[in-house]
Amino acid sequence: MFIGIDFDNTIVCYDQLFHNLALERNLIPKNLPISKKAVRDHLREIGSEDVWIEMQGLGYGPRMGDALPYPGAIDLIRKLAKQNLPVAIVSHKTKTPYGGPPYDLHQAAYDWLNAQGFRSDTSLKSVEIYFELSREDKFARIKSLGCSEFIDDLPEFLTAPEFPTGVNRVLFDPNDVNSDNEGYKRLQTWRDIGTYLQSEKARLHAQ
Image (spheres, rainbow, N blue to C red):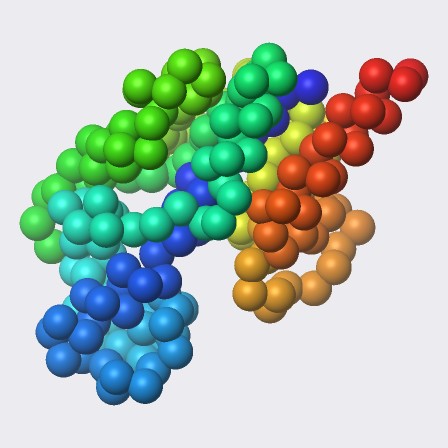
């Protein structure tokens, strides 16, 4: 059993961060839902796509330290590592933003992970971390690692024809906005993901 996990919007929750960034710049009404998607949609509706692109660079760059992990995500990764189950974070992440200042997005992500204990925690130190520059490289990494399970927040990624065969796919859908699909198992919380992974582990051991 080898568990692969996406990073942005799967381990890291950006909802509060992007809401705060937009409020600081008076770009959204205060009553806008606290959601990254709500901020994005509002800025696009008012013709501020360029502002949204630059804000992403800031959020994934120097302000990433303000982002929070999804509840239970880090605890589950630590638990899996303590059980000696191999875990890898595999993310499609460009080195610099698509627009705005050329922040080092990889370093910002490593710093965030270090702040969560991935360098200091004995269990978390065993987790492999890969930031791939393209979607194709992410597919290739999942295949080369031999992942038996992969957790991601994008249904279009999990159901893509290029996705490696023989991998159990889990869609993390915290806002319950996606449909069920025979191509993946849709779960809304990290607690549910933990229950699923433990059941898979037990099933494999029973074979």
